[in-house]
Length: 215
Image (tube, rainbow, N blue to C red; front, top):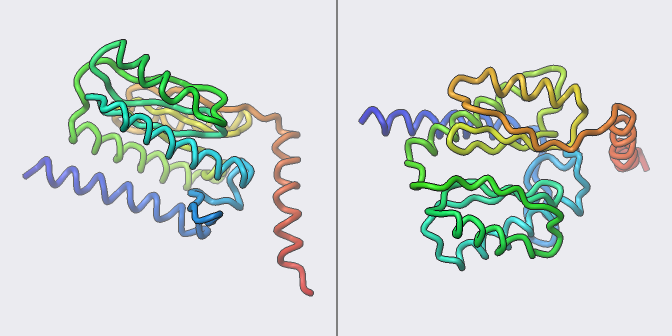
């Protein structure tokens, strides 16, 4: 009874955090594919967003075809594929990596699969709870653009992805480490200079301004 209540609470917090983020902008649909995240503020190009979605779908399909006994999750950010979860042994870990590494568009694979028994539902609910707390805290941080970050949590280990400056990377890592229950934070950032970030902001602002200009 207590466990089911905690699980429900974890799901509710995560859903609330996700809803807060998504409320700022509707998702983009390109060719029938919903491009998650806020395109207006995501620092990937629209093409890369679509490509990441495609990579994730193909990787999930290939993992399913392996009929692995493990629990495997795949996330692509700017064409770098992160694999998390658990598999029974080192051979299975290597087999999963080989299956997804050859997907068109993938420029790198980070294999963080653990070897051992699958995580419990309680552990996964806790991961969801932690991810929701981090998302909500990033959203509240006035000095950060929360949509620049992608958060993956597996067995209380937090993986932070995104195209960010050194200052943003340090600040987001500090926030993640401050969340109760976090065991470790792994940085998977692509570091931008402040000048590159400013140029990126100008490039995305121009089309938006043109679209809103009176005709």
